[in-house]
Amino acid sequence: MSEEFKFKPGEGLPGRVWTSKQPVWVRDATRETNFPRMAAASQMGVKAGVGIPVLADDEVVAVIEFFLLETREEDERQRKLISAIAAQLGGVIQRKRAEQELRENEEQFHVAREIQQRLFPKAAPQVPGFDIAGLSHAAEATGGDYFDYLPMLRDRLGVVVGDVTGHGIGPALLMAETRAYLRILARNREDVGEILTRANRVLAEDIGYERFITMLLVGLDPQKRTFTYANAGHPAGYVLGAAGEIKAQLKRTGLPLGIKPDVAYPPAIATGLSLGDILLLLTDGIEEAMSPDETIFGTERILEIARANREKSAREIVDALYAAVRQFAQNTPQLDDVTAVVIKTV
Image (cartoon, rainbow, N blue to C red; front, side, top):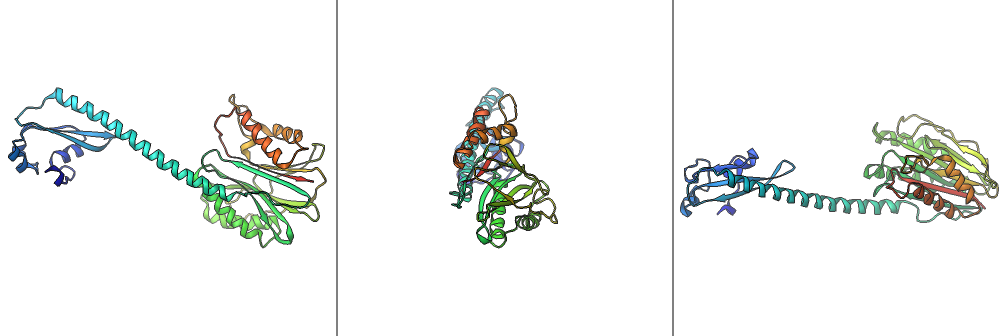
């Protein structure tokens, strides 16, 4: 009979328990004015009853009812016993809910990570005179770091690294949007400063005050073996010579993207590259990586690793950098996304 009933808040024994979040004792159901099942109770000889709330996170997720075939005053001992059982049941329901939510989140993150990984380059482009490699490892299932290779006019190549503030689903979506803008802009332009200027103008309309994007865009000219760059608030890149010396720093040339729509990003003067030169582009997740004793990895360690592996391929250099960071952190969970691109003149 109860299966045929639906109770509104405050209606009947279940509704009263639901509203009050407290046990409700009914001495004689046949004399209750707020008892929609009175006819059935009378027919069956039901008298006393008690309703107990089952709570999960202070929310009533169920009501347990017990009935007696005799009139009885409230029994405190029985009420406490049933309440204790209901509390355990509430804990079970709460745990099951958390497990279900975790499974759903894991599935969503898995899909998001799979989609984001497809946005990263599957392989470095084959450019005469250059050996190029990059990697990116997110701190969570998805991240805000970004790197890409952009075909540009006159057979030039754009190489970009970027970092959206934060990590997770939100920054990953913003990264995907930025990637799309840059790819469109790069196909029709060769001025790296103009590309960032136009991208910033669009992104500033979409990004709120709580986020911004740092970005370093390098334009390679394989025929002249030169490069130019524009840096929107990103950590400096480095050019190391064949002997490991610092030949140049790719310092900031403007604010991060998305802060002010009218910022212009002038490109740096074209710089020549010699045989054995290494162009090192990074996000701050490498420099700011920490050991368990809270020591910062720092720029000097980055340069030392690049120097120690300068005779190796670009792929081996970026892999050595990431391995060194993880070893330095003693494989504790990453606090930030880690991204690196190495361009070696060969």
